Image 1 (cartoon, one colour):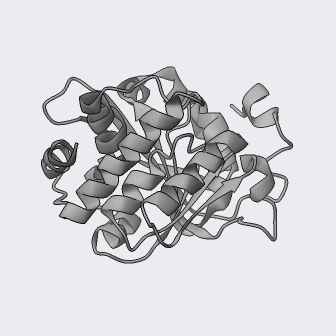
Image 2 (tube, one colour):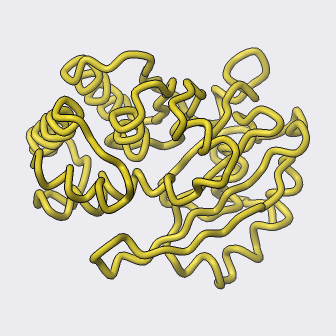
Length: 247
């Protein structure tokens, strides 16, 4: 896995040290072992994990002209929150590749959070923590609301719902960046999300389409700039963002 992940990251312009490659390899081993007890991923082959989880998580580098991503690439310790992180994607790969970033991993299933804590300890990662909570709860005033430079999510939800979960965490001038399938760029989901994004204080600034190098894995990054504070009534109580998305 060490040389494989080095190769995949090099295609993205990321040159990993031996230590970073070893961290990815250990992460893979821990993921596969834990997956026997807890359903974390259906993707388990080394090559598939290296591309569809690790490299895909690092696709953020394609937004090199985004001001917050540019700060991350320069080694600045920006604050990133990964909403609905699951097995740690994209938050942990971003932390390994860019050690200076300060990462918060948020997930509603405690079994996943226990695994994330094990990974953080096993990989000896610093300036990273995992929180067991629903996204609606931690975005309340006085908690983690509007404290992050970037909120990311690869969660399986429509953009309107994700926007309500994620935009409240972003400080003004920061970004919510959603990892989506390539179909998002021209599909109905993009159009349907425009009202929600505006309601929550955002503006869809960039929709970047790309294919991961040497694959047919067609992806898209939707970057929403936080242009004004999110109204205090959002996010709504648990369940409503997904059951009744604003559109």
